[in-house]
Amino acid sequence: MDLREIILLVSYVNRHPGITLKELSKRFNRSVGEIRKTLELASLCGLPDYTPFDLIDVDFEGERVYVRFADYLSRPVSLSLSEALAILWGAKILAKGHFSFTRPLEKAVDKIKRAISSELAAEAERLASRREIVLDEEESIMEAINKCIEGNIAAEMEYHSLARDELTRRIVEPYTIVVQRGRCYLIAFCRLREEFRRFLVNRIRSFSPTGEKFERKPFDVEKFLTSYSPEEVEVKIYYAEPAARFVRERVSKERREDKEDGGAIVRLGYGSYKRIIREWVLPFKQHAKIISPAELREQFLTELQKIKEKYEETA
Image (cartoon, rainbow, N blue to C red; front, side, top):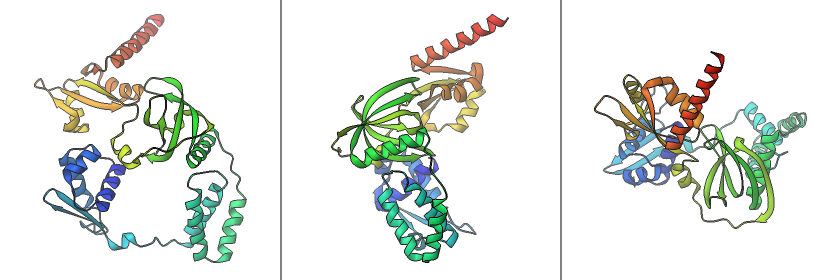
């Protein structure tokens, strides 16, 4: 599990004391063994001299698990004057845009202003006024998305799918924006596919509000994020020795099938054809073979034929 998933898991157990490992396994789509191992690892997060249970206390009672945080983690964060000024300055700049988090941001700013002197608050205002925001294309799209989220307004979206390498137009009902692994995603109900989807913001080519109001459907964002794989296709690749030894170190047993001949079949979920080829096929040369899907095999063979023809032209 990556850091985001670990934080999500630990926080979830803290909010649901006594939840069973089987329940967590189902919710996070991970094996019971991996869930237990991850929670045991989280308990090792500490302070100098880095002893276990300093920050996170994890208890297992049979199949049930409990997570408690150190008392001081629940205390309000104390800001230095320079940190408070930086936040006020940044908030002032963000206020010039139109974002769904504007109201919570204003409340946070008011609390900070009450905690510092009026002179410092005025200085932050002065510094912010010396900076002007110029929205680039992606920021303009983000602003439009946030307006639609806030007003429950449907939008026509032009989206580039890397998995199919095509541009599609669709009507979406935007629900929220999330950040995962450093990437910004729009969570929306897609009327084209008639289901909730996750869209990478920097692949949205245009986003135009239709003016149509929509009624929000019951929707659990947290559950959706732990189970959804956007536009991903399961890819199976066979690796012969010596490549198999390398992939065994990189891929967990849950996503790998070791063969009697020393090779291994690996199951990967990716939305990007180019990334699969670049990272999981080409580096292993003749020792890697795409098993499925058939479309990916055909696409790869077509690309190889084009490369072969290019070399023959210059021969």
